Image 1 (cartoon, rainbow, N blue to C red):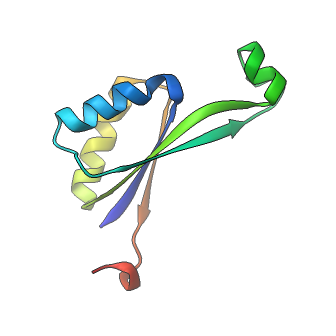
Image 2 (tube, rainbow, N blue to C red):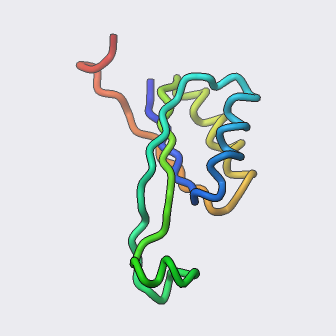
Image 3 (tube, rainbow, N blue to C red):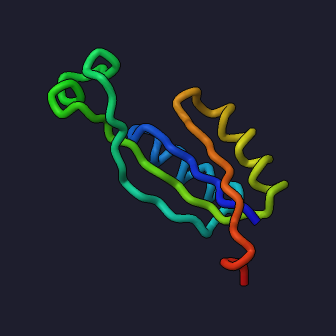
Length: 94
């Protein structure tokens, strides 16, 4: 089992939620978070003033093959998606 972390710009949140639900992924977590960056890397005036960009983090607990497949599918949706596969410690498995 692995944890698939999916970081997305908040403008993509609803699209990702819809995609996950439509493809049978009905058990996942979502957290609001921020990406901090140099002012020159931020686009909107709001982002430049705050020094951060509104992001969302989806966490899914999946078997490794399923996580790999979903990660490949999500990457085709947008270049603004960052994906990370994290192993689950044996001590944490049920």
